[in-house]
Length: 332
Image 1: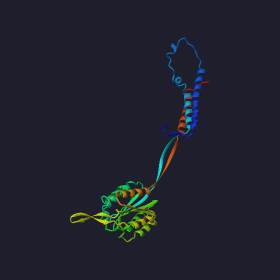
Image 2: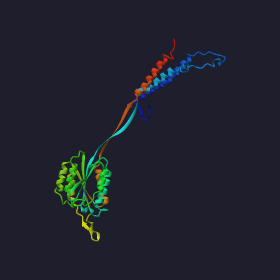
Image 3: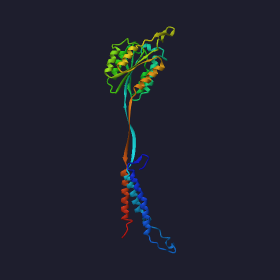
Image 4: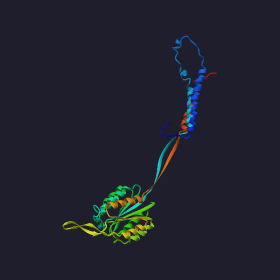
């Protein structure tokens, strides 16, 4: 009935417990005053007489009255048990990751190459999310959904690991990728809808222009973060020859102007990644910008123990009444 989580709503009633020692003192004094002393030269004749149960329990009714008083006082002090917890409300974000898998993503200005570096950093980004649905769109000359929006990050990362260059026709269809991302996000009920578009080239394929697709994204309140991948100048690119793999330097052509415009139109941001380290920093920055809003409401609930204590007190009072009128009944 009493533990570490029990508190009192009206602790001032406990001052009334002082009455109990006062009443005990009064009872002892009254009992002694009502007792008559008889002197005997010896008590041996009485040594064989055993006190009865009634004599042993003659103070029982008074003891029960004190218990009644104590329980009633504690009951009116209103002991309560308390429990506390938290209600957590999360406002998730839906994120579509658009990953360029064109042949130029095999350039090795990133280690081991652009596409593998992008996959590694994307996995780290996924690991940092908890309540957000994330989907994956891959594109080259065409675009398609590798993974729809999901909270199953294990499945998402498995599908991301399977991504490789050459599975679709080569080219860079940025507009088609954005349109595919819009198709994934347009029915989302999330408060925030985001695309992360990573590419290393210039739009040269697809039926939809990148800025036209961006206008469609605007109508659905989708924010786009664009990442241009590639070192400044030239990058080593592996070429298969009859004598094995040879490397030749190819110019890095990132359409920064278009990527900046896409980000600007949707209130996003454009980033330029020139190596593995800066790519990680970019994803870390996006992670900070797009944090899930979490509201935590603490609560404490109380359970009244008033009835328990008063109930025990009334039970003791009933026992005292029964004993006083039966076993310990006093004759006039």
